Length: 605
Image (cartoon, rainbow, N blue to C red; front, side, top):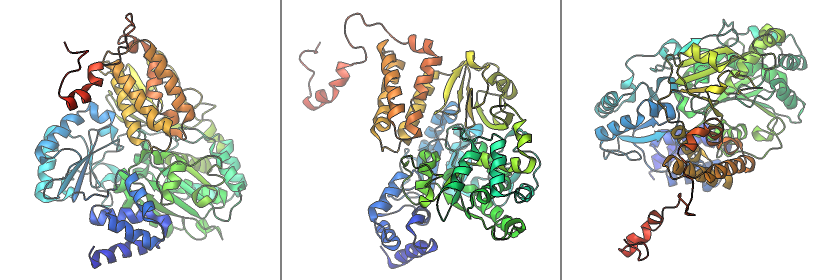
């Protein structure tokens, strides 16, 4: 490796204090500079950060947006999520392959353009979509994909693809993307009028304990899906022992079908930051981290500018809001394309510079989280709600929506509907009411809470969206009568297989076995006992997996068995001859036939 290259990498390491805790930032900077992180680069990074090369390689090999092998100057990542596939992602992929003369996973001979698939990029309301470096291209068709490829070959500049900026802050020079917000319905909590600092001013009149009491009285629960009481989490962190404490915002919404945090980050970032600042005051923290998913890298400059504005206004940094001694500031930590990092302990591991592998619990993050210090992790929407509670009072918030699950809920709605986008609805709204709002009168299935949630049929459309009935982190995918529910379930299983970190066997192997058996049923080779197999194996994967991914990954199969059993039964066959219909002897002997160059004697017709 050339001396100048060595010097560049050494300089990048210095930019992050030669700290192994900033390994994620270093390898991403090297990736951005050289198009990959080579073995030699890993050696230099390890030496500079005082760690081992295997630690560096472990990180590089873990994240989808990092690569040990050279990539093109431009990387096209086509989203092949469920919504993208419905919109024709396969045909778009074929058009890109034809125009570029390469297949997915390859780079053009001039090293200019690489072509890759990726899972959901948070654009399900405007799919099919692709990331071209950090430029988002939405609403793709085969023709526009060909035109995109031609323009990239001509200009070599992804920014040349931006022809019509989206609305709102998407048109800001700091964002400058074609992304649309598609905010279809604004409620009184998140997207109502906002006065920067108003919530802080009221909160700082209270003691930290009194502020936590208000959050508890409001009955606010985490909006990420798990629904843990926010005030209780803050109280645990405040009471935990430790000299340093941290506030982390989980802005890594990776659940397919979810894109509501993207709209908050674009239009209401100050409200979220204000909520984080309140949390810092409540638990006695001076350090905050926004963990931003790699797919939203295009928002980083805008968010950095927003943080600067808050510092200039005295709403971040020293003596915030005139409160002597109250210091709190925030930095942004970028993700690099790993769904599992939406799980809070995996997110913490990633922010610490490592692979995004979940940690054992207990201890819980509120006791020992980031750098083993008391840490609260809440998502973007939760911090916004907390700020509104401080601004308007707990009674105001508790009076909205469902008595047991008060407040509003942001729903990202996509699929076979007339008006895809973000809806702020009061908790307790029924699925039927939501479908009427979004224009989906002929829906036959709704995936509530993304692939890790549940797929419900029409008999459950009168159920309510709340923590006591249908809980969701926000993803609502709607499917009309023309869709194959079992095909969608199979696609979701493929997603989980791809995104499993591979740490524990039930998740790593179990999901593969589940998908294989589901696909055999889809192909008409299933028998009634396969339903028992899927049910038992699915439950085993849920109870024996280490983290939330494996504990929910069988849900696409288990919930479709529960709610769409007739679809399964229509493809099953009773076994009357004692033969196993799922076993294909000719297929099983295929490799042996090829090696020996002849058909087996016993089965030769």
